[in-house]
Image (cartoon, rainbow over all chains, first blue to last red):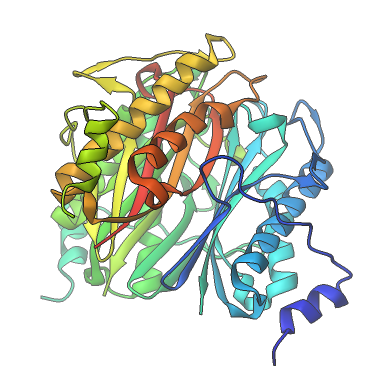
Length: 154
Length: 154
Length: 154
């Protein structure tokens, strides 16, 4: 059935953000062979950073989770542009999760779970992925989270 | 000869830890095409963090090396579950090493060498891999090191 | 036309640094299937760190950009050793950019643009890649930037 993932997005009342177009000399995604490689996505909506700051230093886990979730939606927005139809996703292979975090922060997995859970809500078992979750000293534009992804596609 | 790597583990008097099973919506590994992709592994043994803290701020290099070594063993434990037989490993392609490190720490390679060396001890030339070694502001559960891996397999 | 990329390097008046040979048990690159995977490269020239220190804490963006550029040249130096002929590069798939950065630093993309731009100057459209840019608490030998890469090759 075509449009299965789109239907699930609708059922979940989720709308993909507008995919950020290429800035400079790097690209938001590369589709090569059976893989779709997506550049690090930020918690940006309508062209502005939606969730900024450092976990464990003024930003609580709930905000971090919202940031991770928005990164995940931006990853899918890029996949939509790349593939046309999200049903072409065979498997989400990897999420690399970079959390803007204070030296004493320890709950990176809780933050990243928001992205992981959303992927499975939307993609089903095709959304079950390998992952890293680490704490960064700082991130571009002071975003709370940056996540990149690799998909197997057909 | 089947069981070659298992025999080497025995000769080195090494026992793989119990592989941590999936928690939440991500998975410890994905086996796709000729590759095995392993999620970030932590220095966890018998369900508890064995080596915690920050390199360059209370944790010395020797402890960091023990942490890196345990991450490497946990990676192989996941590979064992995924592949059944570790002899199916064709080549360790990559280790990404994330060291929980103070701003002034500079010896990330020495820490990661413990993981790299162990892989070659166990896998021989098939264990020679590409690598990154970087310092993180913080890591999940305050572990000293997190390492993920990609293998070529048959 | 053979030697196209070499000719472009010459036209740009760029000389690749000597490729750092393997130290220890990891390797600078692995060439497998249609991919070339390159270990994290540092801003090292003639065996010494050329650009050290932390962005946002004593190191300005221009120095960070020089570091990123030198990392990119070292990546290409490894590719030259691996492939013999840089014209075998089909596409630069990924740059992972790790910037040694203070907690308040936010201009990681500006630093990494120096590496991205150089790749496109040298490789043309084959140099347009996906990317991450994150801030690290510390890096090996206190280098300002570490970058690793994956190429599609033939």
